[in-house]
Amino acid sequence: MDKIQHRTIFVNGINMHVAETGAGPPVLFLHGFPELWYSWRHQMVSLSSRGYRAIAPDLRGYGDTDAPPSAASYSALHIVGDLVSLLDALGLDRIFLVGHDWGAFIAWYFCLLRPDRIRALVNMSVVFHRRNPSRKTLTVS
Image (tube, rainbow, N blue to C red; front, side):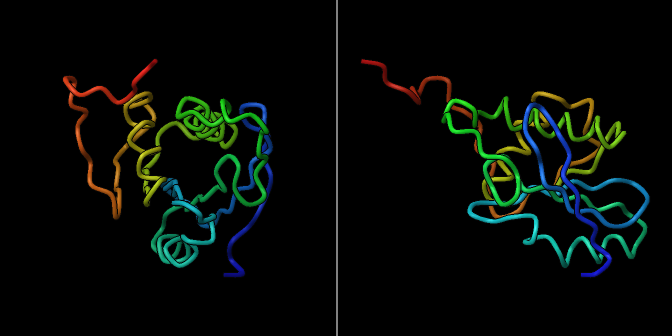
């Protein structure tokens, strides 16, 4: 684990803690709930030894990344915006994206909103379900 470097990067109006190791094609890991970058430590070391650059942030509101006080600051648009800003700060054009649990949902939104930044997606432990347009997900009274 001593190969993993840590830093804080200002992205999308917040300070984000990022763990990284390796060089080569970038792989971005998105943790689940209530996890941190640390969930990916073994995968990061393994992939970096195979010629990849492994990157795992603490997502907005987790670990050493800032937690804005307003619940409205945690939409998928905000979190994907954090990640796009992170890629820009790291000088990365396109990435391999890996998500787990809640991070899998963010990964799907990332692919939907910014497919130009994704080489491939791997999601674990959450099955993708298409939205049923005839079913209301919100009831407003």
